[in-house]
Picture 1 (cartoon, rainbow, N blue to C red):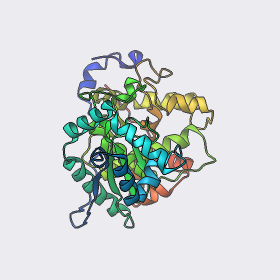
Picture 2: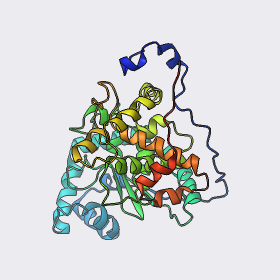
Picture 3: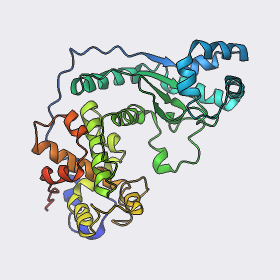
Length: 343
């Protein structure tokens, strides 16, 4: 077994084999079978690639003003429809974009699997947030936004556009360009639904804009992961936090050591941007802790704190948690104590 914190693992490697990824007790999963969700899925990439002339593109845009204004013109690069029509025609003609679309057809098929996953997740969201109105799900292929529209996941309120070309994974002809491998591995089919729901959680995840501390970022991400935990109760934690099973096992095992590093180095209330980047933002490793400690470790630790808070306050609903923007209070009232692993 690869050692992550050599000075911390001495004499404990055999024990690690028997440590589960999480010591949390099973959460009670609510019954949502009586909640009806009628999800509309629309395949924009198939619609666009069916257009065979500029006149057909113009007709399509006129018939779909919401898509034109919110999606195609969202970046503000085209001053008029005529410029957009030229861009869409050029996009439509490029063989590499046709390849991206064919790969999307092969990898996602009729999108029925993802549709069912969204419908189930939306039932849980509706359970926790009764006023939730499920957005329409539009899929797209944008050529990685190189034509001035598109992206991985764009939330427009009443509809969400998912760029399938971003999530085609290892079997795709083309992968997302200029993205390091530690991020690229998350652009795969398994992450499409969780990634989208994480973006959707921003609708509910209130933060204090004046609090720029490491702790504030940690708790905000912890709340986002807690949201995923509630609306995707059967998804593995590895998908929610984007760690491998080995990474998740090791950070759980070394939770006390990681927490001590944050406390001893007075990181929690540090608001320096570079400190936030080191412990919360995407990096291949958190080298300040260990050369093999995974990046984004502050997000994972924030989830542990938020989980402890919810255990200590079982009457707090998910909606109330997401509304609470007092990171310091959540930490104080969490009664958080890192797990004490002993041989």
